[in-house]
Image 1 (cartoon, one colour):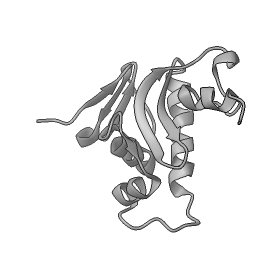
Image 2 (cartoon, rainbow, N blue to C red; image 1 turned 135 degrees about the horizontal axis):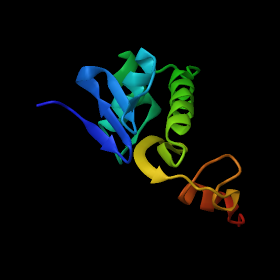
Image 3 (cartoon, rainbow, N blue to C red; image 1 turned 90 degrees about the horizontal axis):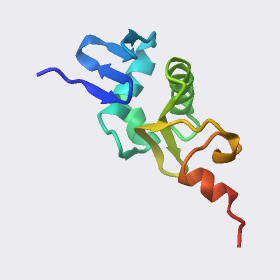
Length: 129
């Protein structure tokens, strides 16, 4: 049986090394593809930077290594360019990343100043006590 992950208008096919956005192939590097597959396989669950690094690079993440963050940034940019109405990779500060299709906010009034959406953006706007 072939592994296929679907989220909104995104389709990830690991065995074919293929990612489709609205039916059109996305151009991803090997590492970008591997990061996306690792996240898609755990859709809806938070995966730590360390676990993501181990799944993709096959080793232990060093404290000063920003590889995961760099590739997540690249992936977000490519996914946003292909599917601007959706956000797929969400940051959970201090915990890791979560893959889930969520509608992108079209107004800055619904977004945190750093582009974080959802509860993290709401938490940012709450006054500190």
